Length: 116
Length: 112
Image 1 (spheres, chains in turn yellow, red):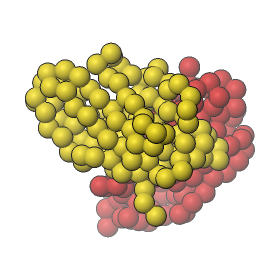
Image 2 (image 1 turned 180 degrees about the horizontal axis):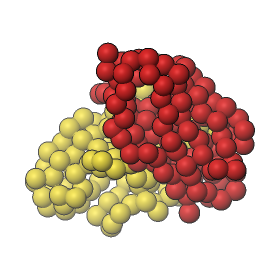
Image 3 (image 1 turned 180 degrees about the vertical axis):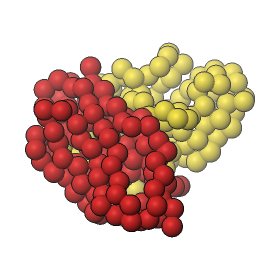
Image 4 (image 1 turned 60 degrees about the horizontal axis):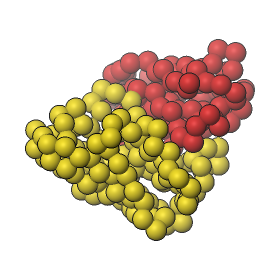
């Protein structure tokens, strides 16, 4: 079946521009996560959506970052006024529940963002 | 807070060599522990997991045992193959946060 789909796969943008990254989770998955993978770094948690609950935004690095999830399905991560340090691979994952013991995360292939 | 520490890579081995990738963690309570793998050009996928102390997770010849006394979850494989070349991530989950906390990843390169 279809997995988690992210678009675009690659994005090059100029410093100061805004970007939108899209994630289509697996159908029926209620939980959706955004992570960031910087070169040589681990995965950094950004934000978590679970059903209709308020999202957990505790990982967003600055107020330039925001995300929404419309209709409990597709999610968009927006980065305003991009900076070079925003360059990274942005990964989306979804799971049936809360991503713990019985609901492993299914990851997309990521969007590689390069800010020049 | 939660944290996961992995050995830094890259780890370079010859085919059929024994593999160990160390992972230790800091967490409150009783976390569940996971290994995820990222093959070249692909997304992360769950490799194995263990949900309580002394549990052993296993898959594709890989094993890891949940050691609460040493707060470790080292990944092992008796005989690696070229196709095992990938980046391996150790991770934990507990009720302190609704997300997986990942280690920095370890790149494994297996040469024929």
